[in-house]
Each structure stands twice: as structure tokens, then as C-alpha cells.
Length: 179
Image (cartoon, rainbow, N blue to C red; front, side, top):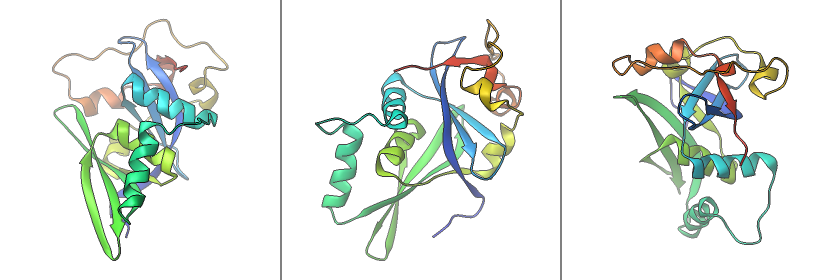
């Protein structure tokens, strides 16, 4: 089951929005050049950072418990869909399979990305979101290497639509997130 209008993405990096101090996960289109920044909470940022770093724990993390419950209910977590932005809020769905039935549950993208990484399932973003936030990047700059990022980050007018704000972003506007 593949939803139309969706593109597979992967976590390219984590950063900090220098204007707010909020963590930002940067998703990159798989086999493409477009990126999608999503502002997330520090808990989700830490879970994502630990997974990317390959940190193992002796006790399960919350995101691991979720995946254990899904398996215990004889279901499979199959993908995350980041579907839209409404009133400056991203929406996502967790997609599960139980026997021949697919079940979709509304979720926050930040938790969804962390869950997907812990479970090893693909993440998809709506084509329209990738188009709205398309910008050129230097991947080494995203990781904090190469030229130093500017001292000030992006700022958004209170009445500016999120899609317009995303079009003007440059990944170098973000600092680097460290858990």
C-alpha cells in the first residue's frame, strides 16, 4: 500500500533554530534533493539523536515500548506519513497493518519520526510539503562542518504563512543539536 502524492524521506540531520532554541529535524527526500524542516520538542530530538548515534540502552525507551505494544497486539507498524500543515501545525499518520487491514492513526510528526527510526519503518512526506519548503543546501553545512552558520537565524512574522516561511529557509540558519 503506497499513498499517492507521498515521497519517502529520511532524517538528514538535527539542528537548533537559533531564533527560538527549538530543535529542528531536517528530512531529506530519498533519491532527491528537497528537504523538509520540522520543529520538534527536546524529548523527541533526544530520541532521534540517540537512534542516529546508535546508542543502545539496557531498558526500553518510550518509543520502544510503543513498538512492543504494537507487536504484542499482533500488528505491524509499517510507515509514517507526514501529510499536511494546517494553521502552522504539521500533521502525520502512523500506519499499521493487522492481517489484511491497514489502520491509520493521527499523530504528531515529531513522535512519529522518533517511532519510525526506533522501529526501522519508512517515513513519507506529502509532495506538496516538499515543494513548499524546497531550497538548495550544502550538506556539509547542515552537519556543522565547512563555513560557520550565520549568527542569527530565520525569523517569521506572526501573520506569515508557514509555507512562505519554509520557502525562505536555508539549513545554515540552524545551529547543531547535540543530545
